[in-house]
Length: 250
Image (cartoon, rainbow, N blue to C red; front, side):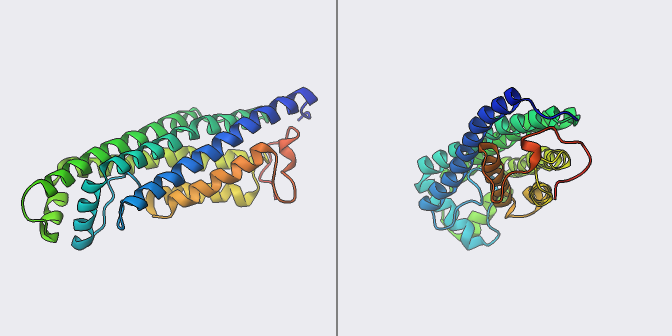
């Protein structure tokens, strides 16, 4: 396939700087969300508004008390997480444009999941926050603040259960674009095989492992570095030229 023209490279570098800064802003917002949530509680939710709570009754008790005492901070944390998620969309669109420019036909489902995934996770975050807030408010408003009552309130709340299912489903949609786009970018040589497979692993971990969010953020930081023009040892050649669609870059 033909090399990129000088104008093409200039345009991509300009767009890359913007995309890289957006990627860094997304990661910063997500990390700050965790920091704010942790500052408000010794036993915070796994992710702000994620509707994922601890299994131990004593931990659930502390979560409810701490959440009720720091609702404003938890709302800020959920808001920061939402901002970080939404900022993933323009970064993903930028990578799709690069992949398509190098000859790969990106599935429409990848493009749809790129937009739908972050929106669904944001919605799940908001629903989870509101559901947990209602439980925490009811817990501290009246009745004994025992570990057993905390467990009963959490386990019997249908809205929180629905929020948990919604969160899982939204993560699956989110993981589709992360994993598939990693494969596309690796195939045209924009990502090394390590980064490509790391993105695939992060996509799966987002659904089944607690470290999924950290894996995704590390992938996003790496993508941001590549976009702004930096990578240890130099970026793969496909960033500067059209690459044949013939497998991963090693």
